[in-house]
Length: 217
Image (cartoon, rainbow, N blue to C red; front, side):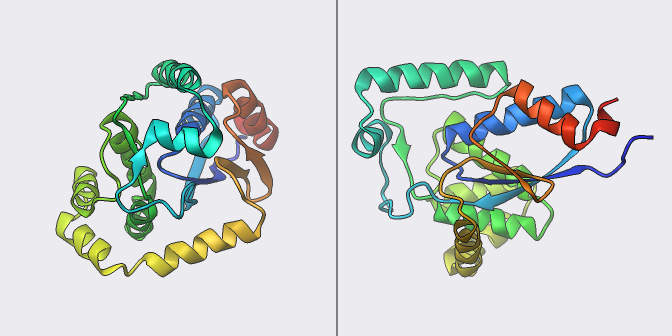
């Protein structure tokens, strides 16, 4: 008899991390193909905690932070776009795309979690940034994203303006950092098996089948 309990999966990630998008969709596809149910919980991580409020041109940011060349950037964007398309996600890169401060976006997810919609919010923010190229540091934009998944726009706006979730997010970030998480995506299966990076559908499927062999039968 198969185990009816979904496998808990904790994912530490940032909403502007393309490999977090890829990794999640690879995992979701592996879960679908193996028939193993997963219960995903998202946790905050800021790739650029000191990012200015106005943000930076994405290509210039990557060049300054990682030494990415123009040619390298073009190739990376093409590869991500192709991988995303194969997984049903649209990366819509443009030369004027900007890297943004994501602290408010994480506060929005934290708020949505209390209403049982953290997962929906996370996926909606991925799409807002990578597909629609929206400014995830803009309170109006974030409130619209909340409304888009059926949450109250005015309540979301007021929460973001007040900063009432700021300390909650900071504490969660500190907690994961204290456990040695320094990069994302960091995926923890069943609260004990840590996997870093986007692993690919086959590797995720193997992990799921090892942890839930009965469900995979």
